[in-house]
Image 1 (spheres, rainbow, N blue to C red):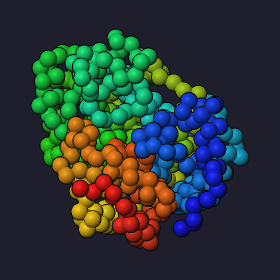
Image 2 (cartoon, helix red, strand yellow):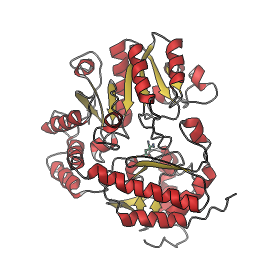
Image 3 (cartoon, rainbow, N blue to C red):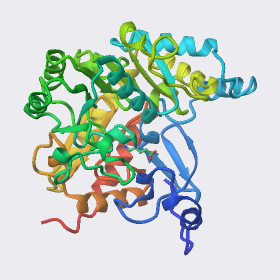
Image 4 (cartoon, rainbow, N blue to C red):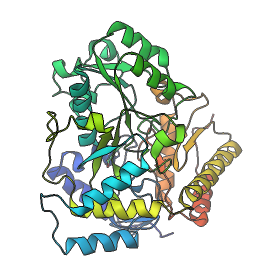
Length: 435
Ligand code: HOZ
């Protein structure tokens, strides 16, 4: 591991200062600004395999993986070569390509409930389109979402819990109209009763329930047994659609995503991250019947200049093909299990209460003694302790998400040595606050 820079002001600090005068908060996505953990974000100059390097030359073992897409590790040679090869033929045509067909075939073969797919450029765009599709198909307007589940920054879903927000539909961000926010209803993750109550309250107005089948944006919170099955039943009973937001879980927890893992089929699925192999891609898909609502076949309009971009399609194709190799998910499972069990053992030896959650190669370490099943539980975890842990790990070359409430990602490039180095580093973290 490299020694960290000793100059008075690091390149990252200088860049952050400059960036803040040009870009709001110095970042193009808020969580990157380290507001949750404090301090200065490291500016990344390159990545390879399981590692990223900052502008000061420090190397880190990366458990963020660009927030999920880099399941193969960074700069996998096959993905890089494909992008290079395609770039020489032009970077965007705004016209159909064979590549789109190839990726669509791979996706629909992989994800059990998707018979047809439409590619867009981000997870947010996929979710936004999926909601429009659900409304167009059902002719209803209201959407149920779960507090703590995040589905990108589209207006409808930037509403979460908080005093009054659930019942009054108060937008979480200014700029979202009351009319839009009032169409979003909030339920509690892993609590079917909270969904039933909403269906009873609005029996004929709910177009869809949208859920992260494994919550990944409040840290990793798996569904309790029966939760997803219960959502499937309730939505069927009330003629509402079930949308699985598999932007994080798609191709991550299993090749067919969480729906394959738990054998619960949604009506609409949204994808992002891995499906684009590290380039900007989102996708939404469903049965032929539902997808025939989408223009130009049906009346629901949705379009995009860079949708199905050839470089992004190529990166996605190579990534999915590599994920089809037989050892892949067993290897991810084994490495992550080893990491998570090791973290648990170290925490125990330090007498620090933790909850370690893992599904496949998606994991979160919560500093909490209580079981965690929903957002309220998540908020009660010890944030101060996480921040102390985060900064000490970062200083020693372990790059984790800069927030107590995000998931960690292990890639195929992480080696047993990387896991060992991570555990060793954790064992040296000084929890001065320890009671
Ligand atoms: N949506 C991500 C957090 N769950 C953050 C994405 C980013 O900052 O790149």
